[in-house]
Amino acid sequence: MEYTVKSGNPEKQRIGCVVIPVFASRKLSSSAKIIDKVSNGYISNLLRRGEIEGDIGNALLLHNVENTLCDRILLIGCGKEKDVDVNAFKKINCNMVKRLQSSGATEIASYLTEVSVKRKDISWKIHHSIEAIDECLYKFDQLKSKKEEARRPLRKFIFSVNGRGQLMQGEQAVRQGMAVSAGIHLAKDLGNLPGNICTPDYLAKQAVKLATQHKKLKTSVLEESDMEKLGMGSLLSVSKGSREPAKLITMEYMAGDKKQAPIVFVGKGVTFDSGGISLKPGAAMDEMKYDMCGAASVIGVLSACADLQLPMNIVGIIPAVENMPDGIASRPGDVVTSMSGQTIEILNTDAEGRLILCDALSYAEKYDPHVVIDIATLTGACIVALGAHPAGLLSNHNPLANDLLSAGQTSGDRCWQLPLWDDYQEQLKSNFADMANIGGKGAGTITAACFLSRFTKKYHWAHLDIAGVAWKSGEHKGATGRPVGLLAQYVLDRCEDCQ
Image (cartoon, rainbow, N blue to C red; front, side, top):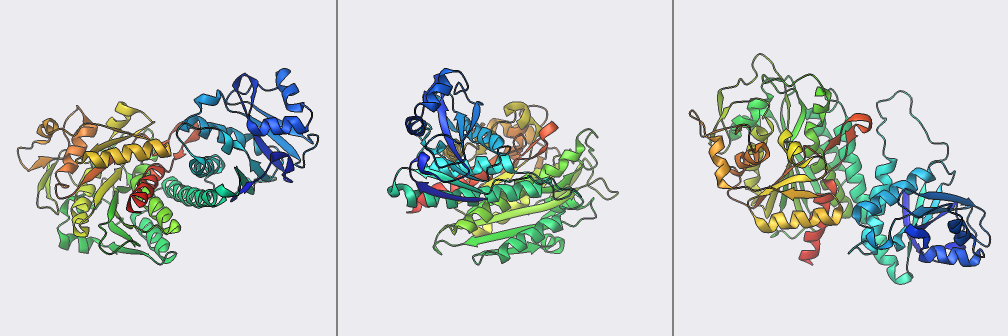
């Protein structure tokens, strides 16, 4: 898809379709008033007749409107003018795309940028219009023998800005929107691949491939023998039961000042999770291919940052494994030694994500990081607590947590903070090791984070549990690409802080 910005009145756009917002109670937007005036009241007459009410979800396609140069005008309902928030704006754009796909138009001029969104400027509206449009158009069909092709697919969107003074600002927003959207797309593609294709080795090769496309991005991969030398007994205990060897993938994007401490992202990369000896139920086990969505989000956000050539130092660390119930797989009751030297009693082999993350978090110390953020489809308890809307957030540093909460509000890719109190640490006690890898029935998301916190005492750290948001089940089953939008916004915010 091609995206660009342009200033100019809607009636003068010589293009396939002009998209015009209208509001609830049949209220005309600024662009609708212009079209109405040149067409001798055509739009207002339609509204009076009740052809469109202006509620979110309404749409009306018009052809050959008098005194306009475009082939079509699409009126899009936007609800009450003062009530448009982040989620409503996304729905408005998605409704636009669905209607346009059957219109026959291929090039579009959108005036939805004139819709007021609470506390958001023109840059935000352009950036997030692109994300919403691409999300609506996304489909994963690369493994199908016959692909459905649209008869006249959408090719180009032009976003309206107010005058030449906003052109540069708009063009920058287009670059950001396209880069972040591409990162989300990449994360979705990796997440949707089945476990027989997206193995730890495949993930490593994709990270290496990405580095060949960007001069300032470097990827290295540690093999199991390298991890043994580093003492990563916890991580390797998970891969023991699989014929797919573990990989520790490190992606270094160093485009900032040499003295700048890097942001480190650590992504859980369990490419398939059977549960190991603590075998999962068979129902919906196919969805355990999504247990590497944390890793996919790290690759996606590194791709976005490299595309934008952000002047930042960022490191992505991905422990990639497959969790299978082989004859030499870890057993409940086994004790392993982590890279930190702390010992862990494995009471449940299906709590494997924290076993690979803890060694990756210890490995992150070598970068003397500014902050470390891990992203993991870690606990079903997070879905019980928060459902499918926000990711769970826990942190040992309140300013970092606040920054992530703010980035979530800006991006619409939200998270919600849960407590990380010492009271919960008691649940991890073991009679036979320094800690157990599970904390019992209560507060599963919190005790999982408490476990990880024991490996993050030397830096500021936050944990994002994305179990509820990384993919959708049912009719619309598929990876969501979250939280690439949240992480990218966090980095963009840090860029502004450095200026």
